[in-house]
Image (tube, rainbow, N blue to C red; front, side):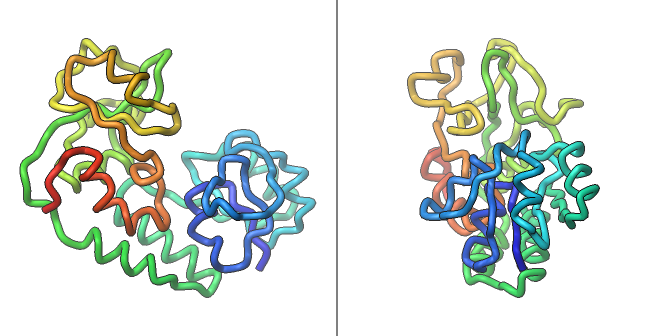
Length: 230
C-alpha cells in the first residue's frame, strides 16, 4: 500500500511499515524519513499528493481542513480521518490504522501498558498555553488535557466552551503553567515571564502526538513537570 500522511504523529507511527510515499513539511519524526514533502498540515498541495498515486491518505479531523480532504476524495483518493480526544482513543486509532497496514509494532503494546494503570498521586491545576499573541490554551475535550489529567495535572480551562480558548495570563488561577515547544515554541525565556505561577517547559511531541511518543510520555513528561510518577 502507498500511503501519504498529513499528520506528523501518524507519519512517525507508520514509518516502519515501509508504506509512506509522502508526508507534510511538519513530519519531523523519524528524522531520517526520506520522502517527498507535500506542504503543511493546513495547506497541503493536493495536486502533489494526487501525483504520488497513494492508495490511502491519512488525516486527522483537527489537524487537516475538510476542504483539502474533500478535494482529495474528489480526485479519487481514499482518505482515512482519525478522531482523537483521549489517550485511549489515540491508542485505539493507532491500532486501527496500523492494522490496515498489517502492522502491530512493539511500541504500541508498550504504550498500552504504560497508560493502563491510573494515577493515584497528588494533583495540581495547570493552564496549558499553545500560542501567544494572542494567548490561547488547551480548553475542553482535548487529547492533551486528557493526557495531563492521567498524570495528575488538571486543566484550569477544562470547563471552557471552546477547545482552544483565548485567555489572559492574569485571569487564570493555577498551580502550574505547562509550556509545550509546539505549536508555539515556548522556551524558558519566552513564556514563563508572563505568569505568576511556576512554569514547566515540556516536549510538545510527548504531550500532543499520538504515536510512538506515547510509549515514552508517561516517563518523560512527569520528569519535565516535576510530577511524581504514580
